[in-house]
Length: 413
Image (tube, rainbow, N blue to C red; front, side, top):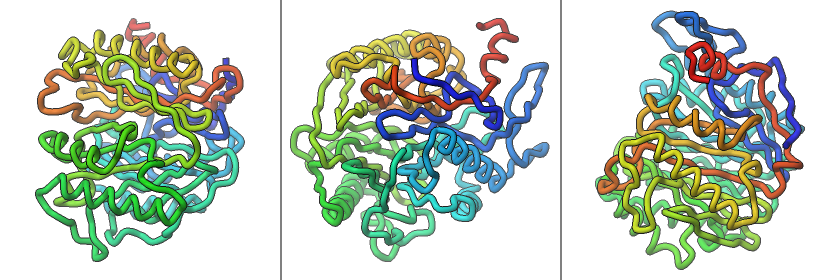
């Protein structure tokens, strides 16, 4: 069992997750909304109160500031420094607040200059309009070249960040040097342009396409998934990087695809599990793809049934971990995507027993999954594990949990 620090300065989480899990020289950060330590009681059930919250109005700057302050505190409790954050993933409930978010993030992020991804997702709580998760280095990290902002106000402000052989690159959009979207309406051409730009950045930092170990792919329209997959297959020889694809709104109009890459310059080992499960070992870190409830031929297992799909997926996670001689307690971070947040409690009932306290760092969002032919998919999980995290890790969490209080009050414990 990893050592656990429960700090009262952190807001009680609204699910079975921790805020920071330190292992293998990394600090994995769970999804942090702009939530305060103050409880909001609704019909006798405790929940989180958002920073700046007033009836009928959510405050983007207050939520962003609060989320950054809580993440920074989590990193520091875990023994790291905020300036060594490697990657931050930003999730917005809607694009009406994109301008205020970008302004607030630039204002409050301080010395951190990480790889950034900004994407639109459904978020769990009605008053939650933003959430941030990511990964930090427990030792010194350095910026990637070129330190030149992509030519668009909503594009990431830096190329990314590096710790040793691990290179975290900002998500890349299909825009040219003037900030104009290339090949509007052609998702494959946009993906090809993005991958070419990623190759250029890697070359400046001593790498190549062959060093990419993971691609997170965001498409605006599920009908474009197969074309984007074709562009990725054309750009890489075997093995193709670990790839996770979701359908979600993108920050720039006419951009049909956005790709977030992670590279590793050292030795890499790929293995497969049941269904679509794949993983890559980079040093002591294993990263999985987005594991779905599909069979070995790609057909959906138990369409529309969240509990059966969760069991299927978690069983495949355990099988994949065993391929790398790891166990469930070595998982330090997970990213969960649901197609419907009404399934939140149903999947958590299985999740919390599979992982057990003190839980990995985690975020849960709502988006589309799979291809057009994948009717009935409900659940996806990505996991990152560190060898021996179960015994050598450090977990940072709050002293209390709104989630477990609510479950107990509602008789779902």
